[in-house]
Length: 97
Image (tube, rainbow, N blue to C red; front, side):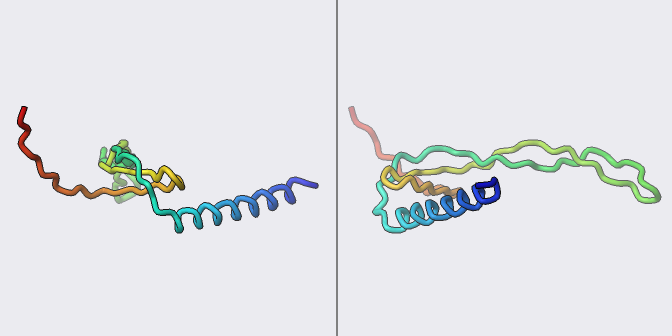
């Protein structure tokens, strides 16, 4: 068996396993674990300066890493993970000792 055949076999196996996982997630009643903060990392362009480029100056940007607030939860049964960027207001009750 050459590498090409091996790669095709592994791709087919991976496709089947993804289908099984998808079916598990679809039919699961979801026992969600605790919600945790899971910020999303992204790169943002920040203008630095103009460089001469013929008759028109070319803008030069620096890229910085930033984080967007995000939360996730994972099902204990099937392993499905959901993400959200929204927050719901939480009511606080007085605590008496």
